[in-house]
Image (tube, rainbow, N blue to C red; front, side, top):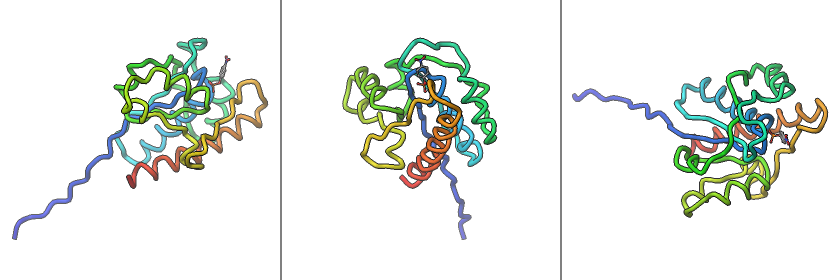
Length: 165
Ligand code: 4NP
């Protein structure tokens, strides 16, 4: 009888996380997803960017780095860059953290297929509600911990949702 083979098809996805500065929320989402993708043996491309240019070339905020590290997630390889319209070609899905990011990213979309790539990260927890990841930048350490737990939940759900899709 003919030999049978099980082909394991790697799930290839290219995911971009976007916030304003690319030093707090989107690097966290980026680092958490990279961590999860590696743990699950997937070959996804994961990156992050900011809509603003203030922090280009900077490492993530040290408070965010410390918060992530406390939970075993390293953000140390990340460096801020600005969102560019070329990201619509390089990525399959673009996740924004808040409505301002959403508006700024959509402003650069030239086609319906580009617009369709843009999603709110928290839609994986609260579908279609356009809920926002709060910006912890001007707040306290508690704000960073809250953002960590929220983004961790959303990224875990993202992986589940896309894996069954
Ligand atoms: P992020 O937070 O968008 O989560 O990286 C911010 C970081 C810096 C600034 C604003 C938000 N800023 O105005 O410098």
